[in-house]
Image (cartoon, rainbow, N blue to C red; front, side, top):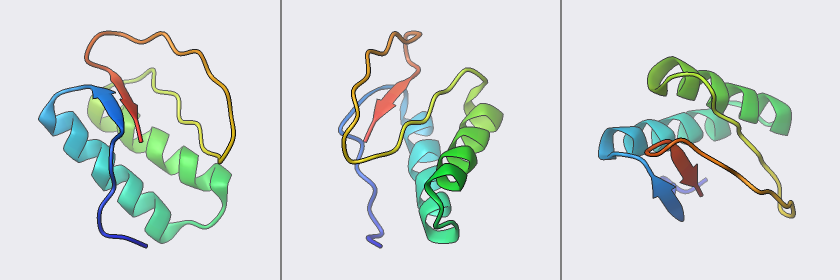
Length: 75
């Protein structure tokens, strides 16, 4: 897998972006099951960035997301 994880859109500070990239990299390198990948990412977000995160994974999905200011990332 690539060493670079790109955030396509976000409303979060630089430290939060780093946490997101680290959590995604770790999850994708250490898990193969999509459910476990999302659970790993959410656990890291909740621990580091505070609770309330939702993690959605897939090639095709629809979503309408309302978020708290400075607490959103899409990649």
